[in-house]
Length: 277
Image: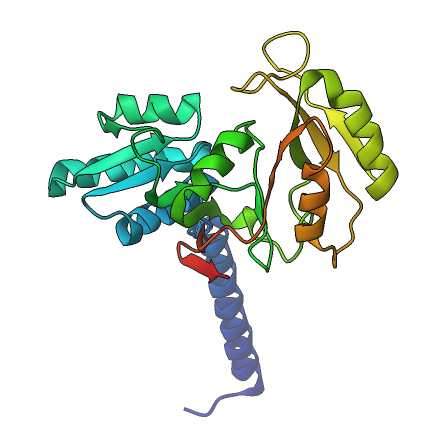
């Protein structure tokens, strides 16, 4: 049948309506669809700490050895993993703690508790850090245990650091903003504070306690000065550390220079980054 101009016009109108109708239905369908959820790939800081701690314990702890147990939140996961390996593998490991907190962790997990009197030489010490720079210089002591941590680390053949990715920096002070802890004899904190500020600049603050009035007191009965140092990225930390230790009344610093063997950083993507000196 021959299509008249009028019939062709109707065909066009019908086709146009169907297309629009389909488009309207399609738009309504997709507008009502629930948005696709995006899986979260960023690992929490605690999980990052856990994977770093587990890998370090698996690679460094051997049977019939004495191990230094550090302090802080990351070490909790290391002790958990160590206790698991002791139960499953029957490891014979003596644990030498660096603080009251570390000692409690060892006792709670029913691990063998030791000390430096009976175990003056350790195969490895596993500890956390507040910051690690590109040269493996550490800031430690954010938890106030720097003196005993450094003593135990100095007795270990290897010092292994475990941390999350926020503790890995190019230069000290890049990410950790609470300063370098310096443990001092209480009667000397004012002259020490003034002497360091005069020589190196920056600001030194007496660390205050949280659950009590007055200054924070370490396990050794001392005070802590937190040194917010000037950001000199090419600073010779070996020299600075020696200079600080020569000031009468300075017991120890939170600078750990040329001490760490290897560092493990749990990353946001679930991997573990390692760094060696």
